[in-house]
Amino acid sequence: MKLRITLVKSPIGCKPKHRRTVRALGLRRMHKTVELEAGDSIRGMVRAVSHLVRTEEM
Image: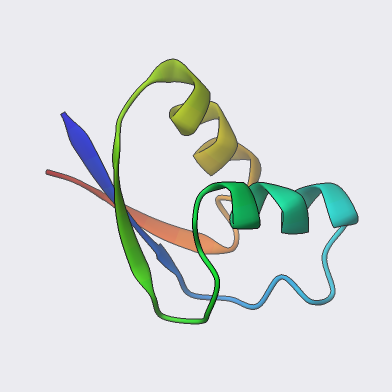
């Protein structure tokens, strides 16, 4: 199963750890989308920055 992850809020004012997590997910700009395999590590990263991203299961 894959996840479609879209960055909907800027990580500028967030903690540095959250900014690094967004970058590690492959999100570089606002409103850009990546599709990643839904493993445990990816789901954990998405949960940590859930206030910044929107996710959809594919």
